[in-house]
Length: 422
Image 1 (cartoon, rainbow, N blue to C red):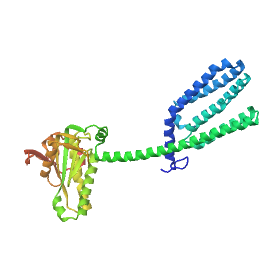
Image 2 (cartoon, helix red, strand yellow; image 1 turned 30 degrees about the vertical axis):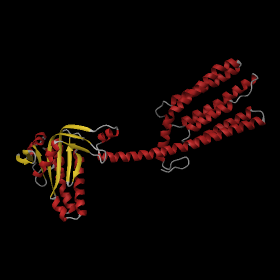
Image 3 (spheres, rainbow, N blue to C red; image 1 turned 180 degrees about the horizontal axis):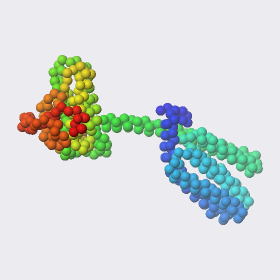
Image 4 (tube, rainbow, N blue to C red; image 1 turned 90 degrees about the horizontal axis):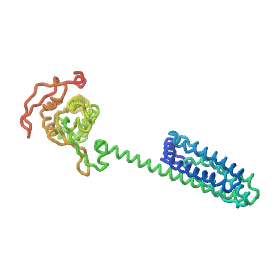
């Protein structure tokens, strides 16, 4: 994100920078307006005490106009599109600068008529207006140059018509030039520092988004946010369906196929599973060797976790033909599904991952070996939860390690479209 002296190379970045700076300056503009408003009101109250009625009347008339301009300026900052129109600041501050000149000339002559000294209000008050304009227009240095040119022209006119001596004109001009040079430096240096700060913030935002994307790729977004807030991530799900998919004969293939070909196979299988999971609202938990573990009804909500898990499993089986064609290997997948309560959460401090635990998880992995190649076996709890019970074959009694005799159901050969149509 390079930048020239007063402009970012990218117009979109330049526009965003200017808008963000103007949004940040709104409170300062309002405060300046209120402070100047208080100053003008003090003049209006004090002048009648010291000046003749004619002088006080003229000064009050100018102050009334100044107060109206200030009021409009302050009110404009509450307009929801104020930040999109920097011309408001340009015009309002130029008008205030000219009104300040007129006010101070009247004060100058009023004081002179009373025998008072010519005081420095003209130089001081105009320096204040110039300095504030330098700050408000710091994101548009050329605009401030144009503003200062207009203001300098007005000040020069004042000197020509109201300053009688050459010495007075010379010293007044030198004072103005000094103040204008300082205002130019303020506007330029402030603009440069604002641009550098904006570029740094933008770079940090980009890195933060990259970090968050990586974090959300590893952990569910809600869990990642809780971790960032320092909370312990532990959840209970009363009705989830766990899917355990395993490649058939992978161990045998690993002994005969080259490592590169083996990685190609796993990559094709896992990418297919990821796509199917995204399509059917199923959450990937992790891969274990050549096995793919997923869950429906966990962090990703599901109206019927068993139906979503079965649709995902069937889509995965249907996609295996593409895997076989792309790898040239006679590979198949077995899938086991079980439904029930699970506990999920994040543990550890390194290589963190959102994992699930519970007997429901173990049952799914033990049911999987009882499925035929490119077929699905589900537990009785999953069968009872699904809406399309007619898609299953008759139940079978099988012996599960560590569990004992268990009833399982095998899904008949159906496509996802057929499942959805029934």
